[in-house]
Length: 100
Image 1 (cartoon, rainbow, N blue to C red):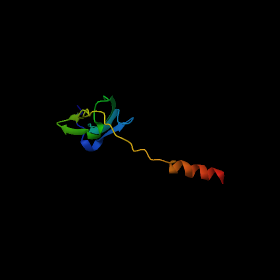
Image 2: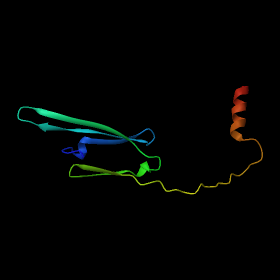
Image 3: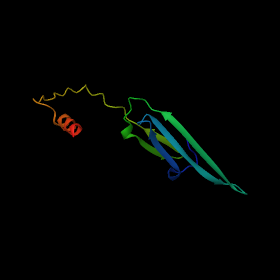
Image 4: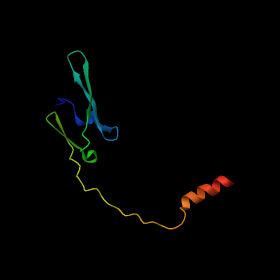
């Protein structure tokens, strides 16, 4: 829970290739004589089986709920690669450049 913190005052980012969720934010609270600032910062390591590109965040009554679906387990795809006779053009260009 993040009581009193509005979504505008929070930031949620993915770090380390989507493996780490970084949450930060804060709020200012007015007391009789001054303002008190409350800041927070948390990092969570996410499971490798989560599809971090589809994370959603919802906030309701000071409770932040993050949802990340599990990655679909697809069978390993087999892809046939065509074999072309002759030298690869990219390699030939590199070799020609070196000779000059």
